[in-house]
Amino acid sequence: MRTTFLPFSTPTLEDAEINEVVDSLKSGWITTGPKVKRFEDAFRAYVGAPYAVPLSSATAGLHLTLLALGIKEGDEIITTPMTFASTVSMIILCGGTPVLADIEPGTLNIDVAKVREKITPATRAVIPVHFAGQSCDMDPLFALAKEHGLTVIEDAAHAAGTEYKGKRIGSLDSISIFSFHPNKNITTGEGGMVCTADETLAEEISLLKFHGMSREAWKRFAASGTPNYDILLPGFKYNMMDIQAAIGIHQLPRLDGFIDRRKEIAEYYNRELADVAELALPTYAPYQQRHAWHLYTPLVKVEKLTINRDSFMDELKKLNIGSGLHYKAIHHHSYYREALGIADSDLPNASYASERILSLPLFPKMTDEDAADVVAAVKQVITDNAR
Ligand SMILES: Cc1ncc(COP(=O)(O)O)c(C=O)c1O
Image 1: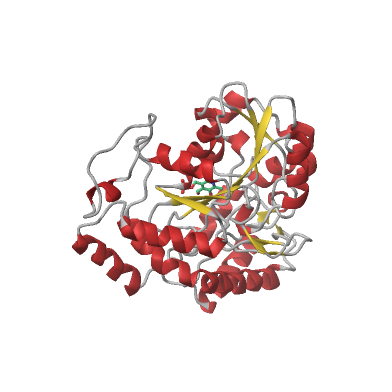
Image 2: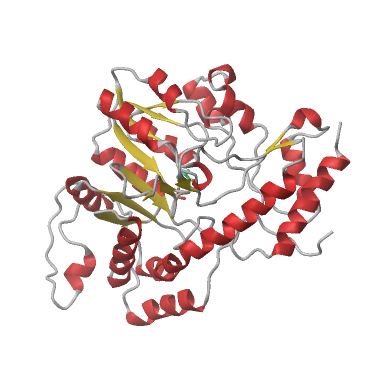
């Protein structure tokens, strides 16, 4: 057994990030300023989006996008139950009604056929989540959205570097929202970015992110600026800081390398765990795409074991292997169980995955030995607890 604890994820930060943060601190521009602009431009160019709005988090991005689209009481937004709470919470906090459509069993991405079944005259938008960094099947989803006049908002929190049929997520004909939380494929500490081709929407989100102010602080306080400003609408305080962007500036050029390493480890897990009957491994979607391997999420077939998924994670921890839970399905959380009243039989695939899923360690700094330790620990827990 390994003697040190292997976390489920940890960011890959080097001297370049540290020096850039120090530069920001020494420069006096610690909040929204030139480094945010540099990161925004670099990220927009990387994904191929006409407009990008840097924010304090992806949650802020979801919130402002829904507000800018005018989502209000009575509007229904279809999304997946296999997501982080904020995808659904932001719909509710805008006064909308989340409607959950079931997932595909292998990729755990939203099932477009199930989305179709959930459309009503009140449906305004669909929020697919590119689960674990694997693109949803966007062509049929766009066709469906067009047929019914719906807006597609991609929750791309897992999908920096993901591609769908040769196109980067962020450059499709929709709105994409990325997260730079420390576990994500690149980080800014906390942070998010909304990418879109819609100039008016990008402007509206930019206004909403900073008090509805006509000009941002760095434009007012820079030598060439004027301190006067006007409030055009009531807004939030969701701007990204230069200290955050300083990290992102040096993460972004390494993103492709990070994904290559993540893929190597994921494919090693796929090979080494392929014959383990007690696991259902994640599968590749049949269409051409680039999986960014944000997460590696096998399902533990608990019916073949004497322990449940939570105990499985505890047993891994005893062997010094960390794991994550992405996700307990939305309708299994207390609030949503009450608020949405969804039965497991309404979402059978998500309900099945919710009780069995776990995230194994996956991050670029992991060594081959770390990955071998994970495989050995998973097999040991299965052998020790077989039915
Ligand atoms: C699918 C999904 N959506 C949204 C978010 C929210 O991102 P953030 O933490 O940047 O607000 C996350 C973060 O974990 C996520 O995984």
